Length: 227
Image (tube, rainbow, N blue to C red):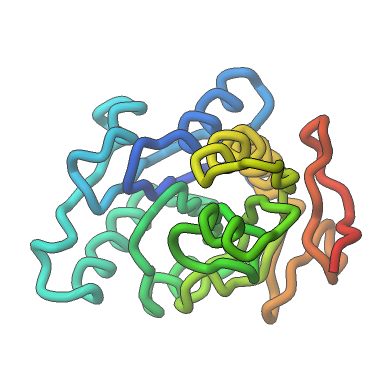
């Protein structure tokens, strides 16, 4: 329960694709590993498979390309999200850059998951880019959202080794379960009222984090040791 209101924290989820991270959140709620409720799932693609993972009453979608420009779509989306009164907004494979007005409206409670060890490999094709660079490690990051692509302050990361002979598909498949655990762990902190962002810095229990938290093999977040 939210310590300030006595009710479950409310999550709005933005999706564009198949919704595996959304499913991880749904499973964690069902298993009592995440004390929260999903109050709406929003998509820029009406045909997104992720929407099928929740009841019809929780779904909202609109074809972004049907709007005059990004700002108009973002405004309509923001109104729809605001209508469900979320405590946190989570981008779970949402493939559109959110504009300044949207980000400002949900400032400090807007999170995204990205399949790389940010600040490395913002944008697309992260697994292939990690292989091309000869990285020995790869991973996923959860960060606060700013208008610039994948540039917000990183809350936590999960890491996996790059193995000899790995393909981009191998990395993606091996990373995905860790990404799911990372998402659930960060949302658990957020839902418990332990996570905040002020002035571009992440705070946990009121203390500034100078490095991203790191996910261990048991799905627990610890203070980071990597630079």
